[in-house]
Length: 241
Image 1: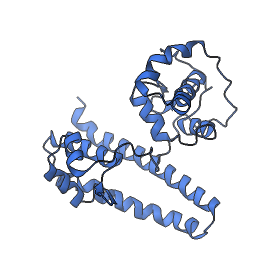
Image 2 (image 1 turned 45 degrees about the vertical axis):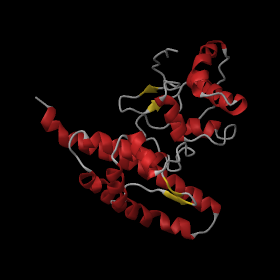
Image 3 (image 1 turned 90 degrees about the vertical axis):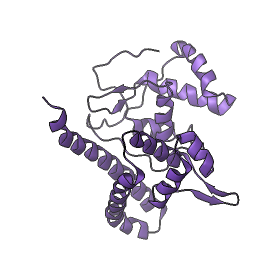
Image 4 (image 1 turned 120 degrees about the horizontal axis):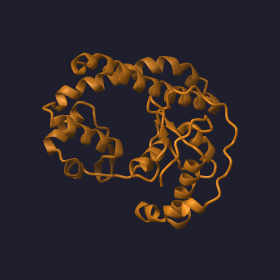
């Protein structure tokens, strides 16, 4: 379904869409919305900086997808075939919200989607295309975080994402030992953010924890965006004529 380009501000951010649909679909997360987009089921517009803009038809499309999953347990490939019927669905008016700045960062989803993968080390190697020795090396550097179960270590979605990224880096000659710097930097970031939220966590009440979680999500999004901009600035001299 093609989307009409808009010039007004009658849109929601991904965080506002999450809040809008959370009561109706408690399992929805930012990661799940992004996953549905990656599978071609959603096509939100983007700002020049890359932030998603959800209009009424985008929200209704997402609501339809989630309803089909929740009520009929349909797989995504079947829902994709049914999406043509969305053209005839009445659009609901979006609620009035305080519109953020155009380039306000999207918060990072720290909880992630429910774990779709529960892989052994050998399965993780097979799915990611890495040798088992490389999986062990990534884990030794703290870049994988398997869960310990009665059946042994189990690797989830984030582990698979790291392994696939490591595979892509490996094609350029960068090995896990080269990627260790990312783990080191993330630990330093966490230590910095911890100083900010520790007072909230010590309050020992649910509201303070919600604020701490929201703060962490925003900080993670800001960190992601800042690193992207700084890297682009540093690389510009190599690609500019």
